Amino acid sequence: MPRPRILLVHGSVVNGDATWAAQRPLADRFELVVPNRRGFPPGPEVDRVDYDDEAVWLDAFLEPGTHLVGHSYGGVIALLAAARRPELLRSLTVVEPPAMRVARGDPAFGALRAVLPGEGHAVQRLGGPFNELLAAFVERAEAEPGGSGALA
Image 1 (spheres, rainbow, N blue to C red):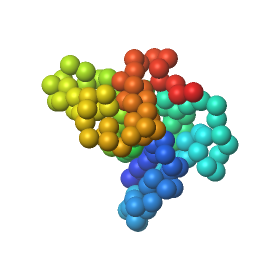
Image 2 (tube, rainbow, N blue to C red):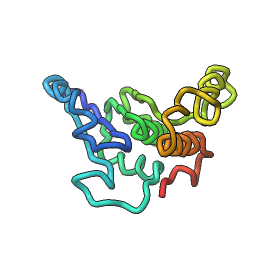
Image 3 (tube, helix red, strand yellow):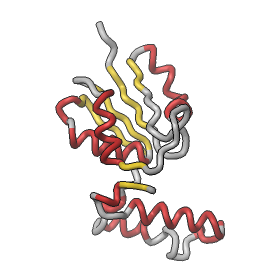
Image 4 (cartoon, rainbow, N blue to C red):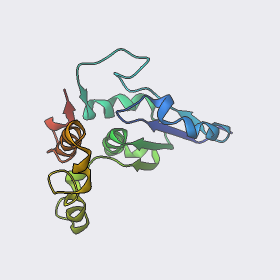
């Protein structure tokens, strides 16, 4: 009897092997599929990442009954892949997907947004480059869908 298939999609900091190392023991009960997204070692670098394109790329790893799991920007890609091919999925799990734009108008999101950069929260004390990086991340995560799915 075949083992249930789990497709694990990593985010933007490290590759799949590093992101999902703690899940390796699940291989005793599940077929773990852990592709390295394009632009991550050991693959060649890429000039840009487009999440819609990455969702299409995941088609090669999806089979009927797949449990799809994505972390961080891998979660955004998993959401897009699930919207494209819901008939192939048994389940979808996303962990910390930076998809804040879909929550605009929600009071809980408003409370969270109030403590992000530019609002005087303690993170401001970390200073300079970190604040710039965090502010750029929040700006991208809140971006409009479509062409904004690409990071150059």
